Length: 211
Image (cartoon, rainbow, N blue to C red; front, top):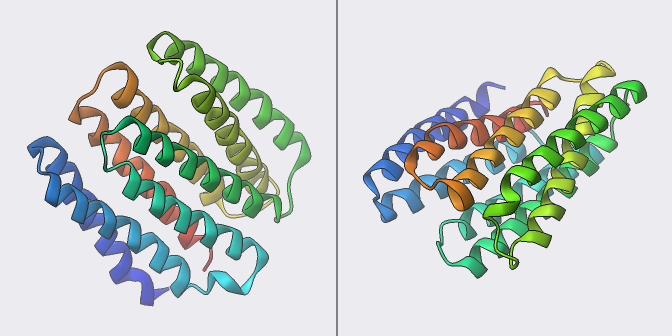
């Protein structure tokens, strides 16, 4: 565990610089800090020997695809953003695979699917008037993937698994609200000030759960 402390510190520092860069609108600092922070959570998972288990391999795949999504979302172009959205959709599928590889508490799974599904519908209802037709199918599928990731994470924690599964999944879902608000509803660095720390906290929690 001590071996990953510098990597966790690197991620925290890079996220702080990233939020600063968002407010300063410094694109070079933003790109460097974001890729450094994302590389840190991939490195944490690798350092904790993620490839040694089926659950870990799914997580490692999710982290790598998330890194790709983070790189793509550095662009403001619509088509590149859409590619980033699909990268994160693939990441959520991989995260779901990781949690489905663990013992699950079935009543908690159904409860989480119901609750998260209802929350997802509310999110779509909020976003729908702000979405161009170009985005609507992709966003709807993305929300479904987010629910499919979060529900088994919560059920895995309820079955006696690491508390970081559920906490990380909920933090990830909250960070996606910030991304959606920034892209489609009310753009501004304030969205990044809370969305980015939640996103990176989620990824680091998932990675540290491998110890």
